[in-house]
Length: 513
Image (cartoon, rainbow, N blue to C red):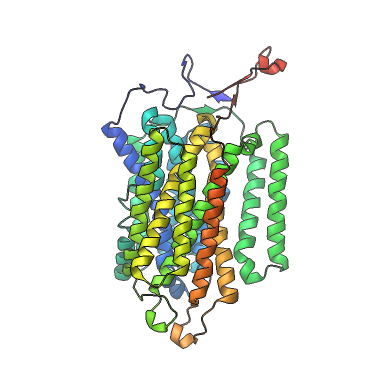
């Protein structure tokens, strides 16, 4: 049920408390800048961890390096629905700042971790950065002037390149000169500064949803997602038919089904299933999941590919150090920015975000497919990476614009949280699939003395992995094309009162926000 300021005839409309003709102000620009930098911190975390993973694994003498990413995504996916609901109930800025505070604590834990287990705990806490993505564009929708919203959310979700473009160079410099712990100290300082900037420059949303918190639904959905992700993550090591793997997978699926049943039975569920069944919402979150899955897999494969010494004769590799990977990664960040700005400009001129998402799938898929067949040339690899980056920017920026079209402000955060779940689960699952294929069929026949104990893959293995990424991009394209050409916004129920139309079962008891 909806809460609006009394006597406000435009309550519930995005940016209703601002004049319709208000444009960019210095405070608004700084507010957007702080949000952009925060989300760029989320984006570059994948690059930084992927680049630092060899050093971290060697220091702690572990073969479970993938958990640096899995723990982060696992907590982000599990927390997203609950954080989204709490944001709709208590305020989006409040929850955004709370997530930043927990992420700072997690980065601090990882920076001083005496053991690998403690480092994973810190990475898990830092996973609260994941909900910051949908909280940010939901907050922008509520407090920014309406005419600035399409460009603002597009820039926020794809970045402006202030950190994303130089991030690979910063990462290499920090790791090579100060060790892997320096990247966690970098996050502690940067997140503290950005959290303060958001508090000082960004208003709290006045939009509220009057509802009870469905704790049972939150526990069922969170535990179900966790079970599935743990089963998928450890399946390659335990064996897909092992009892422990099946227990987590089946148990997780049972809990998710129980959540679906529970959501249909309770009056005020964690997430309204009727909203998720809408074609405009279901295919948006599906397309988002596949696009983020492509991004996660491509970002993880690229450092492995370029840091492998060419002298090993595997048909790929350039033997660069951590700082040298920046030459390949920085163009991805630049093209991601270009894609996001294109979406903001074109949607502001009434272009359909659905077409932007489809174009993103085509560009990312083409880049991955070309990389699969030609990854032994520096110039071509950079060019193909640019295609992937452009597709990522188009896809990232299209998601919030699609959800803003489909869902009213009062349900924005809780509905967008499901997109957050998909954006976490797919990047966690797709690399597991790719590395299961690599480890089963494409390990390079080199002695441990030559590889120094590292596992290296054949050129055909990278071909297979990049084709998996290309296939995910094609799925993103199909999901985008399945979206309706014109999206009708979900209706918000009016609070029921004795004698009202809703209470009497009469028609017309809903409003479009």
